[in-house]
Image 1 (cartoon, rainbow, N blue to C red):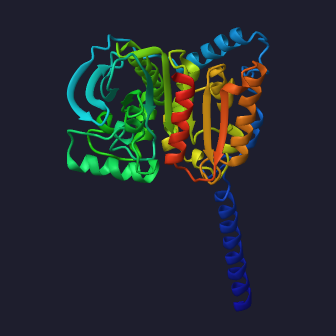
Image 2 (cartoon, one colour):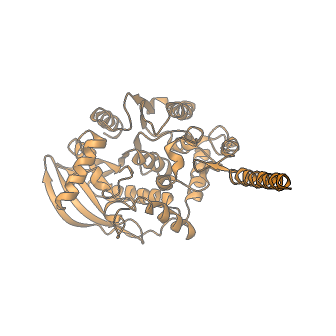
Amino acid sequence: MKKTVICLLLFGIGLTVSAQEKAETVSMRYETQNDMPLFYQKLKESLTYPMAWGNSSIRNFEKWREGARKVLFDCMQPAPPVAAFDKEVIDTERRNGYTAEKILFNVSEYSRVPAYLLIPDGKGPFPAVLLLHDHGAHFSIGKEKMVRPFGVEASVTADADDWAERCYDKQYVGDYLASHGYVVLAVDALFWGERGRKEGVRYDSQQALAANMLQMGMSWGALIVWDDIRSAEFLAALPMVNKDRIGTMGFSMGAHRAWMISAATDVVKAGAAVCWMNTTDSLMTLTNNQNKGGSAYSMIIPGIRNWMDYPHVASIACPKPMLFINGLRDKLFPVKGVESAFSTMQDVWKNQSVEHLLSTKFYDLPHFCSKEIQADVLEFFNKNLK
């Protein structure tokens, strides 16, 4: 009798373990990894980019360019309502060969924004550059990443100096260009600097901001582009600026912004993009920084991947002079993807017999905008804007 009970107990225990194992097996089922759907490869394979030059049925380049830009704008809707710029100078500082102004202007009916405007000494009109700051997961400053600040607290100056050292080789790009005869405009993007978070800097809030805007029908990434377009139009309207000689430049997210507005508006005549160009195929992997969410929202245009990849959008800028630079040791942008994107754009400029106006370069550097690169950018603008 005891043996029978013992056997039954053991049998019961065996059944219990088996049930637990089954439960564990069920609980181990999953369909996402590293915040990517397991079917992400199939998603990528489904992207045929029907509006890309060469894929589109439109064979006339100007008509394609017009249609591709319309698709881009459709994906960026709605545009913020336009307002008169109403420029106001709130502070000035004399510098070596130019004057720095702290100004306010209406970038839209929604936002009256602070900006730095650098004006060379002498008689204009001058060529001009719209400088677009990076992301860097660093939100306490924006325009101050590109132009040496003044009339601010010591902590802001220290923050800007530190960022200039870490990302720009201890040189403010805006001041560098202004000292060589360019009017320079630098504006905060929404969520950075003086357009930042009332409660203080918080990394996760960028994702919340983007989600909240999407729920009200607007994309944060698209708003940044619209603001940049309007900033370029403001620059063109200034009396000291030659409106036929306006360029744009940026590093990292600023580079994305630079080729985006070069594609989106012909107010911009030439663009330089440092360390932001690739393909969706190379960026959308289980290990790339792009798939972590958060920061990516600032550069997402909803639905555009159903029509064009990054280099296809950038190719709307053709036949403008464009400079693209990436680092061979840049961990954010796989070299294979950069090479593929460069090749796509080279084919477009070559197809239009203006291959000499597109320059694509690699530097043996990580994600960094060195003084050597900045000198390259200056030479590019001197050649194409002066």
